[in-house]
Image (cartoon, rainbow, N blue to C red; front, side, top):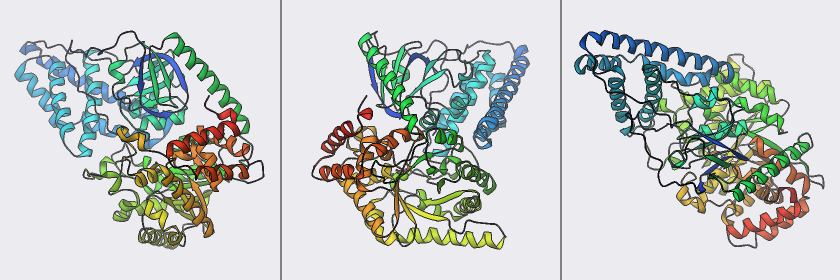
Amino acid sequence: MARRRASPRRAGSGEPSPERGSEPVELKGIPASPGVSIGRAFLLDSEEVAIPKQAVAPSAIPQEIARFEEALLQTRKEIMDIQEKISKELGLEHAEIFNAHLMFLEDRAFIEEVVQRLKEEQLCVEYIFSEVLRKYVQAFSKVEDEYMRERASDVDDVGRRILRNLTGLKRLSLAELTQPVIVVAYDLSPSDTATMHRQHVIGFITDIGGRTSHTAIMAKSLEIPAVVGLQAATQRILPDDLIVVDGSSGTVIVNPDPTMLKHFEELKKRLESLDQALLRVKDLRAETPDGHRVHLAANIEFPEEIPSVIAHGAEGIGLYRTEFFYLNRSDFPSEEEQFEAYRHVAKAMAPHPVIVRTIDLGGDKFMSELRVPREMNPFLGWRAIRFCLARPDIFKVQLRAILRASVFGKIKLMYPMISGLEELQAANRILEEMKQELAREGKQVDPNLEVGAMIEVPSAALILDLLAKEVRFFSIGTNDLIQYALAVDRVNEKIAYLYEPTHPAVLRLIRQIIQVAHENGLWVSMCGEMAGEPALALLLLGMGLDSFSTSPVNVPRIKQVIRSVSTFRAKEVVKEIFRLTTGKEVEAFARARLCELVPELCDP
Ligand code: PEP
Ligand code: MG
């Protein structure tokens, strides 16, 4: 989640906005948070700090140094204020993101280099500071090591803050917005999202980021339509341009013509009234018209999402992605800190179950503190359970915290990315060891704690009967299962057209997982994005999936599908789709059947 931005620009060197007239422009990105927003653009990164290159008299050097020290103090105060605000609103772990910024403010080598060059070059401190800053940011951002590159964005962030204090320029912060805007940014930092004025930010669009980027996650949990990974949005959009964000399809329209505007205004109205109408099913059971009960849960990344989970009528948490605890910070979360978070979630959701997934670091989720070397194929590399088994010191702390929290509600524990039996057995051995350790310490643990495995690697799907002996449930992680089954990198936009949940190979795998799990007496959930797509949920229902887990905002739609379609009908649809031969055919067929069976969810 490193932010890679240019270092401060010299005065007058702002980039022109390329090849744009007043014609509407359509940009395609990655859908990050559903819904439509229409509003004026607020370019977060467009404001540049103009830096004069002025000579100063030798007698004025002490004054320049004093200004520099004042700016450092002012910056420290600002960061500490933000830390306090975030700590109150979102919890201590989010506030600790700023420790790296505070450390930079005390970096003797950096401060001394600025002072030394000031004395030698006799130019104003803004100019000298920006030169030294640029050198540092460039040096950090060129190194291969992910940890060092993340330091570059920290240095860049704090450096901009110091420069604004030196030049006396104020950056309009997202907390100070007074009108509704669509935020357009290269990326949004955790401090941007945490401090923004929630009523006035009606949409996000960013140049970088994927489905799991901090921005996407926050947008979804705040229910703000968002599109990420647009690549050049900040260059193609000017402040105050009229923007349409369609977060469901990943489309952004810049300066729409009246026909387009009318289309999206109507779409927005239809989606809003649909959302409103669907909330009526919030407290109703996820049960088919012929009485088949399905479990419908939500995915979360942070405990702060629980109000949204409850508001959308989910019956528990089907996936708690705990690795977010470890990201954006410079130390490891302690057992106590994790225990508090897991206990809070378990208590808030009781009597509903909470499936806590052990950390899935690696792939596209890195923790800078680990200094994991760059890998050629990170998704095929040192990731998730592989990482945990290699670092039992880190794994054990988390297992102890989960086990201790298990007596405060209905926690279930799940391992990510299991690819073979030995891995699962090794993880269970460590879990057993931790249970015994806690028993010796007189600490209580739920004796019936259920343990499950994510099925997201094709090898695991093919040996499900063997894995079934070691666990009580399975959860299908289609985000990864699809990428591994089809050999399609899930974050590479160039081959996104090949990433097909409806590919017959994927459907055969899913059907087999459900069948074999049931033959072995186990229940199966799905927590990948596929479970949140109404047309696909129809197929999953027909295949006999026991539990669906998706973003809280998708829960009412999936409940509506379940409540509208009998298992008999859903099975018929499945029979028919297995006669089809391509992903595109299956998708078109599933959509058509959804339109017939649940017309209110037919493409609005
Ligand atoms: C998945 O792979 O489907 C999944 C739910 O896990 P993640 O998206 O966190 O990899
Ligand atoms: Mg996964």
